Length: 297
Image (cartoon, rainbow, N blue to C red; front, side, top):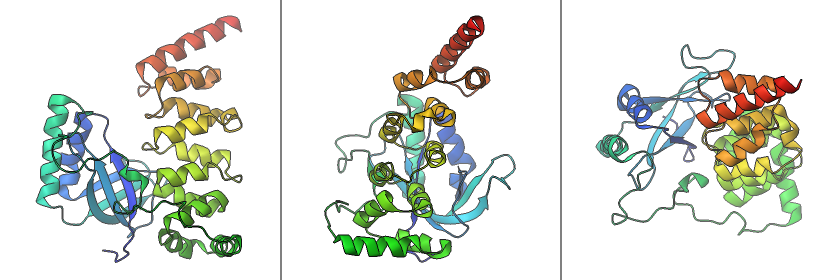
């Protein structure tokens, strides 16, 4: 396993009890898990997968490394692009947590809360930090403009090989600066880390392009408020791809999805109407809009 003390944090949530149990019995219990991604981390990258489970107070953290990288050009058969994670030996506590969560999911549903009387209270936002014990406010530490400029010049000149390690070792307040000023390579690495606070600062970067915004929206665990902030930007929402990704994202609130749905073209509406993965309300509204536009043409 990699000795790097700052593993790449990957947050995983399940949509329903069947998906949870299938993932546990078919993959996790056997020491691995496949995470879909159009931009997977390189092989041997140290990771920490944080599973959010019903009835469990804190995310269940499973350390491991990327055992196999499947790209868009060379996807894993039957799985598509992504990364196969090989876990370190899973503890009995982790196994029991999954077994308990499956029972809760079957009896109380996926949104069942943990017992409020057990352990420390958790607000559900651990994925916002690369280190669950890190309490530093990213805006607490201030540096001079000169030191910031030096840091950014050095960062933007790093080769791809070195940049990965440099970014992972940066302090939270440095990542905030990098998010607001970094080039595309820097932004891509910060987007992969999935830190919610940093993602919000990436949205403030004037160099952020529409394709990058679309790439962010392809992450199934993208926080809801990031999606809402993207939807507020009129320039990004001129893109059909961005509008469609907002509509289809599992975390998009229904009112926002329906608002973006109205702006989609007929081709996108037809795609939604035919897809088996489209939510029922989105699908029915897409069909209505499609019919109205065909009658009006």
